[in-house]
Image (tube, helix red, strand yellow):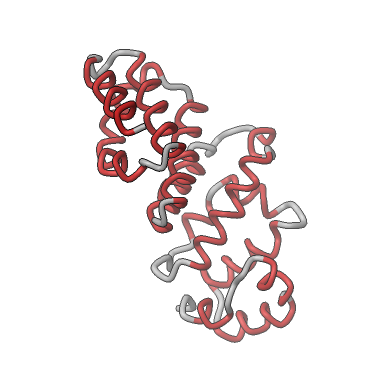
Length: 191
């Protein structure tokens, strides 16, 4: 697998930066590296992703970009980098701004929205919630039965008090258990 990954990387480097196939080869490298448990060899190259995506922009659809960010978020999470995964998930959700209601209701989007909200709540370094609450994916998720409590909890972090959080916890203990949320950790996020 390691030799195959190196050969794929060499193939990627033989294409001109703006060539249409370069994105497809990179996506295959990322997917293969994850499947072969060699993602650590690809991770250092992710810092160049924005520049490369600018080169590929003429050949990328919005769905290609969404798939890239969602998959990288999953792969980085599997590698144990939760904060980096959260950042890629945010970029995935940004690509749904202005999308139709049908696109916001797919299972993949709903699952990614749950993960985004759980990460925002559970990662100690995340203390800003206005951007997350502004995502159309989150707003659409809030209209569903499952989404209401997680989004409300994020709203408490955004504009609530410690007492609001305690009241929310009393009324929604099942949500805390279902999503493995800890009240003590949540208390540290209240401004």
